[in-house]
Length: 328
Image (cartoon, rainbow, N blue to C red; front, side, top):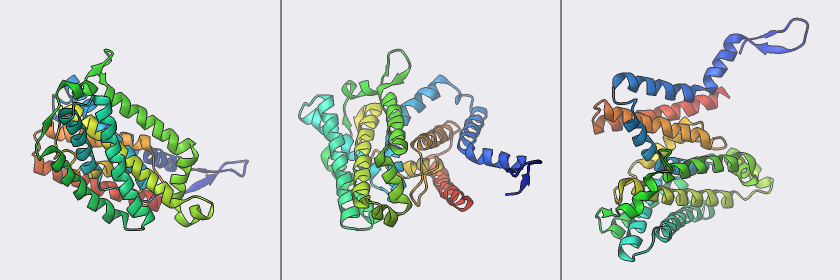
């Protein structure tokens, strides 16, 4: 970066162009979101409408909570490819508890989230404590959880009706659902955890340099196992939110959600190499991914083409992550 010395002092300051470039880099994610909204607003006369906003607010919660967990896992230097399947499994567990055993929603939801946490514990135990490659462990859990989702639902969509949909209905006359408010509260809570707590700093330390973290008294195995349990529990909550939005538990739900969550996290500033990330940034990444999906549907893009574009966005997110790393 080119610099100049201020007259009469020893202070060295960056040229205005360098400051502008830095400002652009720091706000790239917001500029991208504004650009995408502007593009679809011009391309479709239906995009900038209350209907689109309602659709967005209903779709956001499930991906948001899954992306929170993915962000913590990535910052710790690991990855969780099982979240989409765990989401479907936990939704199926909630559906089974309610339809087969007549459980009230709070109890069924608790069991569903517990099922997600247990899946995360299995990932953490095998990956962190037995030192198996976490990529392979969570890839295997992806298939295990998906198979269990088919088993608990008998490969059928389980319709839950109004009992679950109340979680997705706008409340208090403010036009947003309990699901959305819960997701937003979790974004704030986990951003605080990451920035202002000992455990949050331990996550960053383990992802930055595991050996140095261990020397300083941090147990990397415990930290990684814990974030994988959190990721699993949040995937379980995402399953409840998704079932609430759809009014049913679908064993095919969440297919590809792990990729959307990774893309959202990386777009939001989380490094695939670990040690850096932001939950709030991941939420903005979720907004970008969700707006992109809704906008593409409204301008008539077919599903195969949408998958191509989504894949391209993921590749661009990885390139962006590498560019950020090289520029530091």
